[in-house]
Structure formats: C-alpha cells, structure tokens
Image (cartoon, rainbow, N blue to C red; front, top):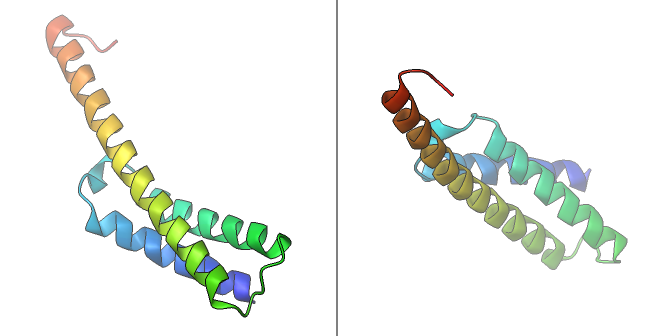
Length: 100
C-alpha cells in the first residue's frame, strides 16, 4: 500500500516540476510525471530491499527528494536539447529548403 502512495507522490512531484519549469512545450505532458513516478517507486523498492523500514521517515524523504531531482533534471535537460535540435532543424530547413 505504501508503494502506491510513493508512486502517487512521485507523480505529483513530476507534475509540479512540469508546470513550474519553462520549456514545457518541448516534451509530452506525461513524460516528467512518469519519470517522477518511476524514480520514486524504484528508490522506494531499493531502499526497502536494503532494509529501511517503511514506517520510518527517511525512506519517504529520500524517495521523494530523489524523484524531485530526477524530474527537474529530465525536464531541464530534455527541454534544452529539444530546443537546440529544433533550432538546428530550422536552420537546416531554411538553408536548403528541404527537411533533412
């Protein structure tokens, strides 16, 4: 049951990262929340396997902090790379007249 709450918290953190950061139009609307969900769940499972108690506070904090960091990094890096790729394609199209 706790894994469900962790996944939901990761999804909410991913949604917050998506709408709080710029360049949200450069990637899909579900990508960053999915990253938050997956990372939070993965960290929770790994920490559980390592023997961390599910009713302790640290497992929750670590899972949510790592998920938030991962969502922000993915959003920022993907947005920058996509903008650069779009700009490069625009220059290539405007120079040759045909998409490459």
